[in-house]
Length: 152
Image 1: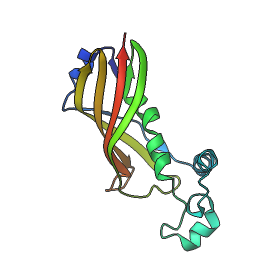
Image 2: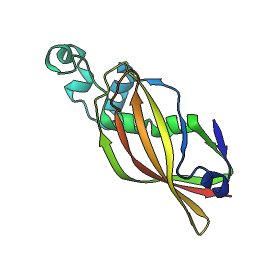
Image 3: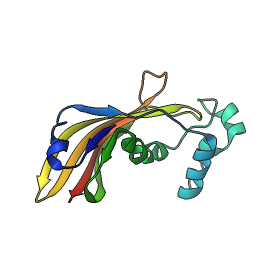
Image 4: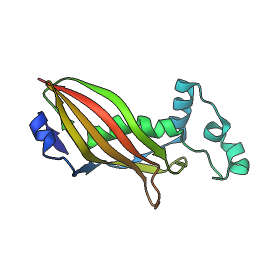
């Protein structure tokens, strides 16, 4: 795990891969809880019997936004950012879902620092991210996410 406590320390990773998280298994329970939280109960996510016969994946799949929502959890496995007043999810510049994540698949996040700016004391980081699926050549998604870090 990389520890970062200032803009200057973050800047050292510009253009470099910062790291890769551990694998996280996406279970049916997690998919069901996400469906309840987002009110998205599409059968392809929650109906295991129907998915066996009607889904091209022959199983349920995670919501794309469920996989995206794992970014903060997985990012914190890669970095420990300290000396903060606040951190903000600022935006998504681009995101492409490449492949469905079948229930019980394991995913992990790889992050590269694409750009960093000091905006009058606020660090704006643009991160290139990829969510890999274990034993798959194609990733679940890749994109560019933007975070603001208010260091003390």
